[in-house]
Length: 121
Image (cartoon, rainbow, N blue to C red):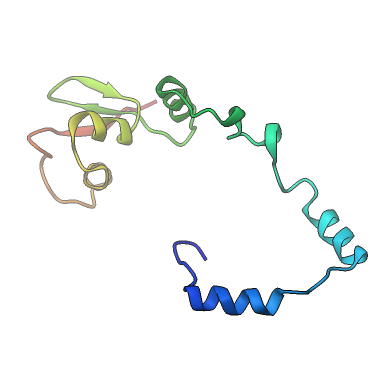
């Protein structure tokens, strides 16, 4: 239930329904077998990092390594940004507006007096 939450009443009902239920050993084995290799716990999990958050440098490195990322250039400032997200955060421009401007879906001449284009790679 992505983005939704059960009400307290529903939680109580579900709790009553499941109380006292037992799972057979055969069923436990089936669950274990089907989830093998799917669940990345602890050190196998890419986001684990011993409970430490990523540093800003690591976050930027991860963003730059994304193969779908496209560099964009601000023509007036003559600056190349590694991604739409980075440019929008640096220039305080809405990311969606910048993306629509670059794709041609937003029929405007500039954003905050600036024009952008994709960098050909």
